[in-house]
Image 1 (cartoon, rainbow, N blue to C red):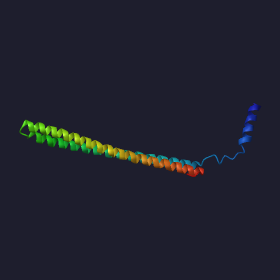
Image 2: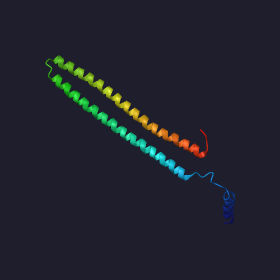
Image 3: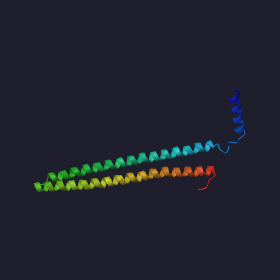
Image 4: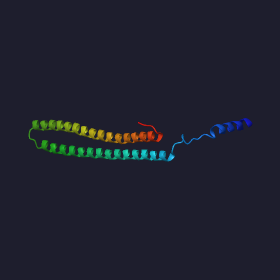
Length: 142
């Protein structure tokens, strides 16, 4: 028992008089930084959600346009008199549908890419700010 008490006494002698204020971070600034981090994530997630809704809405609009175009083309093909006109109309419809599908896909991918870059920029900005705040708190220069 005396050996254990002696070790405790030695520890207190070494560390009991040491000033740890230089090593202990300011917890209020840490909490504030974490609040800013959480707010940045919420803003990024909100932007992602709104952008996903915009992509889905645009996709639905494209689908409705495709169905409308298909119905109009079928109506024109059905009133054609000769079988050659019907075959020609069907091939034209297939070509136009394929071109429109590729164009629509490209538009949706460009929207998604732009939105993804926007969210990444938001998070990257917060990370840069957090490192700058850390450097300022630690007294370091860039």
